Image (cartoon, rainbow, N blue to C red; front, top):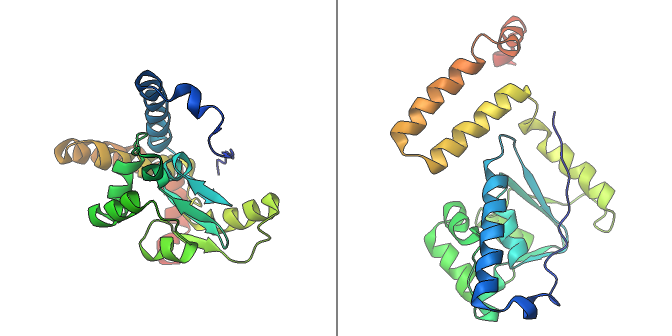
Length: 205
């Protein structure tokens, strides 16, 4: 099981006035779109945990993950409109893929804060961590790891193949994605993990 943990506390608002130019916006957009696309394309299953507020760029960041969880008092909001700007890091396009075009317009045009219950209802997040001490990051991470365990129990090779199938289906024309899927199937069929699973009759357990 591969695990990488990193934190994002949000943007530094004291920096924004210094880059509030067309050139500054272009540079930050280029950097962040590239970084979030690389994050989304990782051959790993990823999880974002929102503890506190994920607003603006923080909300965009969550869309690049496969799964999203929130703690009970957390908020998430695509609040760019309040600054008379739009999403620009790819979060808008990903938001459409996650919740659909009508709901994406609603969220981006209003800049509303979403509670965990609201975010779960529209499919923006996958679950709410209700049994953790929110102020204790270690406890939050323990509960988040417990939540994701069923989805990362397979061998790393199988998980990499699953994520690659999803990435290909997201970015490539269907005919190309289907060909890639055949190759990925072939890469795990007959492998050590597959043979071990057959002997253990895991499929029917």
